[in-house]
Image (cartoon, rainbow, N blue to C red; front, side, top):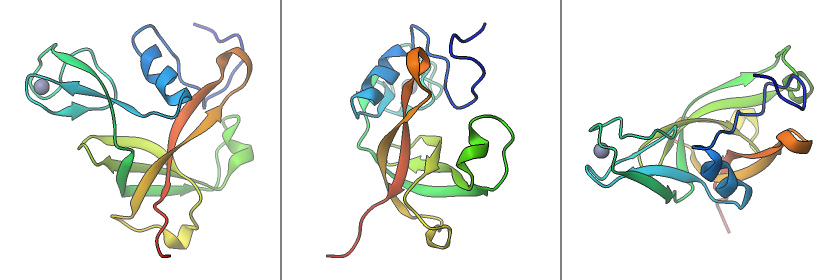
Length: 145
Ligand SMILES: [Zn+2]
């Protein structure tokens, strides 16, 4: 499988099943898969529920809220285009709905990162041309005022 846009490592493969997810992200909505059999959500998207194996699953918008579970500040990455982007914060977040998700933390100083940090989803374009997609990233919830 080759990509028309060349070798990039920041752009996911979009297939017929995940098209809905990426289309929603492009419009600023994070979708999760919700199971109507057991009531739980999961991510990454699957065609069956990983909790109870039911196929009674559907797309549902997430709240967009999450908390920081763990992270790594990446200072070096030789895979294009990440090298031009360092340092960046690769992270795992706990979505308010339960699933854990790999993502990136943006708009946050390294010193401000801590376990449990309240986050909100944002969307960023990745790639360009035909292969461009919009990916969910997270930033700290604005506090104060
Ligand atoms: Zn289930």
